[in-house]
View 1 (cartoon, rainbow, N blue to C red):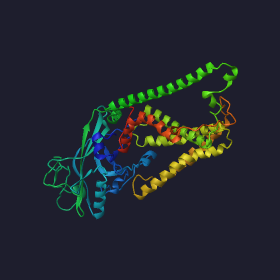
View 2 (cartoon, rainbow, N blue to C red):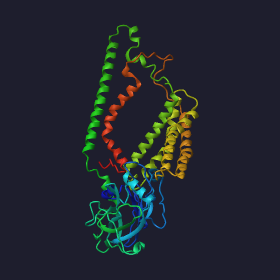
View 3 (cartoon, rainbow, N blue to C red):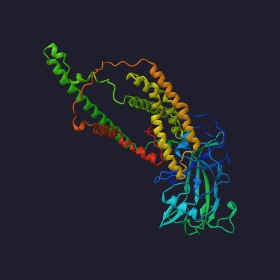
View 4 (cartoon, rainbow, N blue to C red):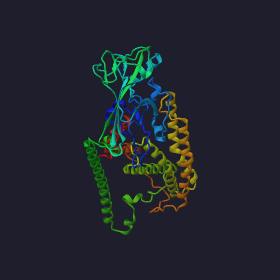
Amino acid sequence: MAISPVAATALAIALAALCLSGLAAGFYLPGVAPNNFDKKDPLQVKVNKLTSIKTQLPYSYYSLPFCKPDTIVDSAQNLGEVLRGDRIENSPYTFEMREPQMLSNSLQISVGEKEAKILKEKIEDEYRVNMQASSKDEKSFIHNHLSFTVKYHRDAQRDVSRIVAFEVKPYSYAACDLLNNVKHEYEGQWNDKKTRLTTCDPHAKHIITSSDSPQEIEVGKDIIFTYDVDFKESDIKWASRWDTYLLMTDDQIHWFSIVNSLMIILFLSGMVAMIMLRTLYRDISKYNQLGTQEEAQEETGWKLVHGDVFRRPSNSDWLCVYVGTGVQFFGMLLVTMVFAVLGFLSPSNRGGLMTAMLLLWVFMGLLAGYSSSSLYKLFKGAEWKNIALRTAFTFPGSVFAIFFFLNSLIWGQKSSGAVPFTTMFALVLLWFGISVPLVFVGSFLGFKKPAIEDPVKTNKIPRQIPEQAWYMNPIFSILIGGILPFGAVFIELFILTSIWLHQFYYIFGF
């Protein structure tokens, strides 16, 4: 089920989806199986984490004093969702399919010093959730009314419906102020949904303007949350519900990026070809001018280094480890891209991409071990188990150490982005239980096969390398060598902006 762009902007991934309680009519790839709903079938809204582009630390929805159901139930989540920090839980908002509700009381909460402090801190840090908060004149106000719009596509023959869009907005009612907030007032004692609000007409679906001020967050003051629900029939079919995200409307930047990349590739290719032609032409001309056989046998030019090209480099063991890790990365990315192009990694399957990449990384350990040990045998190495051990633990161990350290800091901040201990144990189990054994199996197979033969014989005595100019320094060469490839891809760096803002980016649509 898709959230419309308006709702996505207003809520910033606050409400995850509707709880689909019907039976699936069939299994569809790509994506998820649709659910059919009859009229008056119960629908339950689920809530997700609080997010902010200012701190990047997500928090659980119920870490703030919002309306809570009688029992909070966590929804089952896959590995990718947990690592993303998603914490999908039930909510007190319930309604029935194709049955609009004018105005419903949700809950009243009392704001103490602790609650007021938490709400104001989250407002200052620009956290967004389905109760959009705002601040003005050093005062904090909160949107305490939600307007739900559920769009559905109806099958006229069977009279069943499929949800194709879901919008949630802090609604702007008549003659409230520019803050678009509602400060409710009521008669008598509060009794949840039975209490009559004097500021609202539940049958007209408009706010009565007897309340002339927005709902301010104040210590000792109560906040009443309300909501209304509307259903709209849509022509969008269930299979096309994600087209809002997947269609690229502004493609000018992509064309500019493609032209820029092609120009840089042509420039690099032309420059390398020119250097090679000039070098080879000079050497070949010199060889043609040699008059005697003795002169022809003397090695000059590029022939001087042919006996040192395949010499075993220093720290060759680590080179083998890095090559194996690179092959593991390449295999993971290649298979992920293939599945993404075929549509198996649909964005409607939350956390599916990260889960797939983790599992592919684990299983690509077989290729990592095979490639590292094959290169190790080329260098006349004999301790293949040592190389397998390094390949299995060097990169994953470094990443896990950094991940564990950062996760400990997030734990200290009580953020929902902290990975639970059970998930941490599952990651360790994938590493030691699957990846490490596959690396050793791959290393055994790679070391068992015949070694690759060098095309030329390597000299026993290495040739002395003359002193190089300052611009041939390895660090300088690395920096200069990275400028042109960076120039070919930097325009697409706004992909990182989409990731930072928790937005979808779909290049295949272009």
